[in-house]
Image (tube, rainbow, N blue to C red; front, side):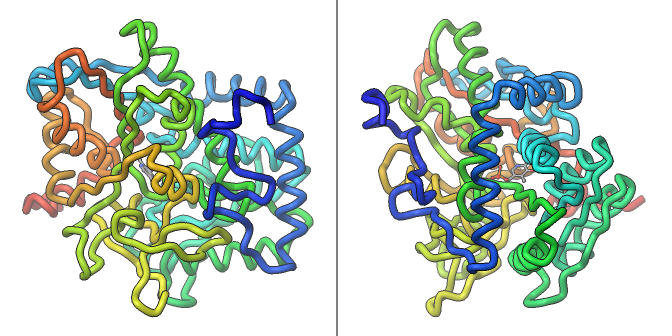
Length: 408
Ligand SMILES: *Cc1c(COP(=O)(O)O)cnc(C)c1O
């Protein structure tokens, strides 16, 4: 290991895919060769300038990168403390950060000669991003989705179908995201030859957590450059919302070795982090266990049964968190807090009114934490939060929560 990386927070994972006690590869023997092949291909692609040149070209012309770093002037005035910047990843094609990663994995699939892409999705955002890029490249796309989620997320199911994807409702187990993941893994083992499994967050067996993080790190790399232009220095605090943790790690990773940059991940506190488990705060309210091929913090009951969790934001209700976050939490490099539905709703409205930006409910959680801390901080303190998605998809949920009838 090079001298300057010995004490680095950016050198992980190790060869087994571990971040301290977390991560790894907890998969069946039948899956192991697929995972190893993927790892070898990704290692080659990562060191190949032509791979990144193709990514850059698509990021620029298809996704619309770089996304702006925006100084939220009226919000800053209203909060009366720290200067608040928003990384505008909600302006990406498809309205969120997920496409950054999907593009990377699908370019990799093409290098590997795979013609069929499978994915699993809960709220449907990752499914839509995957169906989008598959349409662009003329690849067959199959999306596994819990039957319960298919009902709840009808607009996204329709989007995926418009984009040419096949949506498979999963009825095994309780018909939710966790069950859809299991079916996607089964499909992969059965159709090894032509199929690539595209995972939507920094979870799954190694190399997925590291690979997804690398693709999403474009967010933090751009922020480093943009905030240096705007303020002449690095930010004091970074804040991002956490479902599985990909938008957060994408922002955080390029700053992990900057000891003066404080890093805060915001989990979905739902109705409050207590024994009722009506939340999705895996770090602040869960325990370590194994799910989806890696060891990490999970929502589970006393018997180790994985719990579903709850949040007003469908995109945050993943029962686990990426293993690198579990390690950043235990090592103390990053701080993890939770924000309730009510706090996120308040932040959602404030963002609309003061900045003319309708945020997704996920980044509204990050903003709610900014609202807590900014007033207490000095006027020269710089906060960058990740506005990782736009809120068009959430207006029905918000209307219901505010008791407004918009059914017409
Ligand atoms: C999917 C999604 C999330 C949660 O996923 P992460 O991997 O934690 O980023 C957050 N925000 C938006 C807008 C999403 O679509």
